[in-house]
Length: 98
Image (cartoon, rainbow, N blue to C red):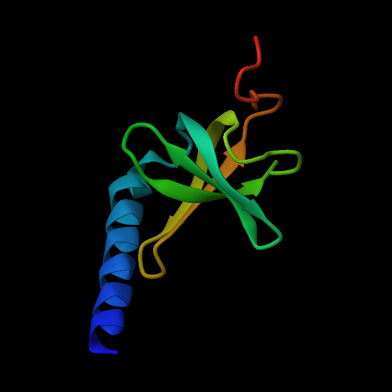
């Protein structure tokens, strides 16, 4: 149980550190890859810096493996949240020719 609690704290610290790293970059655009898509949300990992956040605007039609351009629209260091908006028409399915 203690090990699980320690891992939980470690994940939260990592998420908060990533949010802190990006907080001054709100409004910037990044290339990324969709890493999760479910009723709970759509998640994208950006390339540089390598962090993951939630697509809160424009997530419709995205699927795991899609390459996408996103804009950082907000962070919350305390909660470890990183929020992105998809740039219009930017998703590319794996293997698709663009």
